Amino acid sequence: MKKIFVTICTAITILIVQSSAQAYGLFWYDMSSQIAQWKKLVIFPLAYSNDKNNYLISRDETSLLFWENKHLMERLEKKIKNMHTVRLAPGIKEKDEILIDKFSVLLEPYPNEQARAKAVFEQTGADMYLFPRFKEKRIQTDTSPRTEVNVQLSSWTEISGSPNSDGIYDKRTWTEHHVIPEKQVHLHIMKLEFEGYDTETAKKVLLFLDERRDYNVDDKHQFRSITKYIRKDFGELKSGKHKDKDKAGAIKIGFKNINLPSDVGGDEYSLKSAYFGMKFEVMDKLKGVSVITDATSDKQIDYYVEGDVSTWKMSSIWHAPHVTTRAEIVSTEKDKWKDAKGNEHTKYTRKYKEVIDDHFAYWSFTWHIGATFRLVNAKTGQVVVSYSNYETNDKPMDAYRKILRDFCKEVNARFQAK
Image (tube, rainbow, N blue to C red; front, side, top):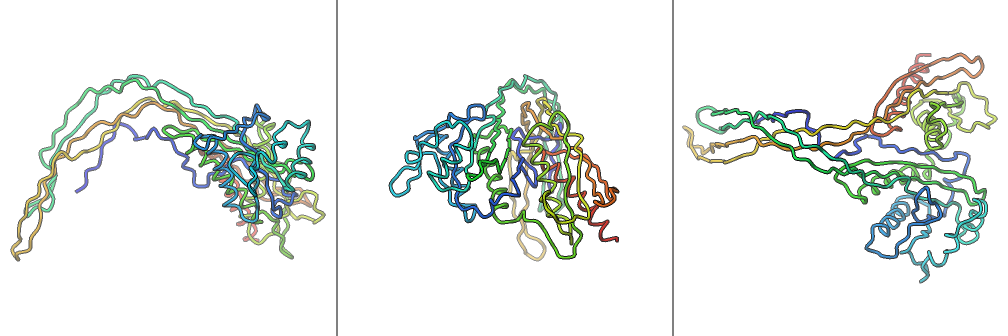
């Protein structure tokens, strides 16, 4: 018989993890570029977004910074097919030359991106270069206050495998006054952004931004988690997954604008990733249609998708200290006995007592996304399908894309019904 543990309030561990099933970051790339065909990528050393020319470089192989630059290089080089990478941070040798020394001129400040792109191509022959930057990297310390609570506890004896009757006996309940001590709690915050540029045109062709807010983790844990998803998104576009779906004779669908609230509409990452997310989900989820992502295409479309985002914000909640209880085995006794047929059995007598676990105060964060998407007849301007919803998630793009996927279900149902 199993004892069901009694909790004083919902058991919430202080380790807040990214539990999203999809775990999308803010991601965009220029679909008119030829990234899928490019073969060589230069990765600049890490920097802070507000100090872009001061690269974070360490030659100490035991340092965190050396590990971060190295891990990013390995994550991209080993996991992305058909892409050779050149790292402008210490640790990589090519024909006995240390690349950071060989290409040190590229770490100098340039008057504009055109000059830098020209230099990158002349020095390395690369198709593209990538800037990884910390938009934020800090530890926020808060005080979990001393808290007194009265906790109801129990003890009991559980018998199983008995020749008579199993069950719980000698149950005793009492109330204990308990103090949760004051404690400093440390919230680790990391926001990491990536900007990619085409060496031929000096145009920005890729953006990625993701963030983590966690307790009881280190920088390596957060860095691994974020770089896992830039590798995933980059790998997908290199695989050609984002190509237009163009089926002969199928209904052709294009795109118009996606509008964000005024307080975030000027944020390049949010706006571009929302537009890209709309295109990607329509390409991925709509069935039996041709999807034309290029707005300059001369192909005549039958319908277009447009959207309005009414809510795009993050909320934070401070959770007070609380306790939970759990059962611990105090002692176990075993007694052998035989049944009428001579078969041997074991009787277990286990004594349990509930103990108290402290849970210190912490912050939790939730993204709130509200949006409406419409499928519009391109010839008449008539709205054929309109879908609105509101989703929450620990990552904004997961909530946003959930609404888009549900919209696509409505569109699929509409086309199948015709």
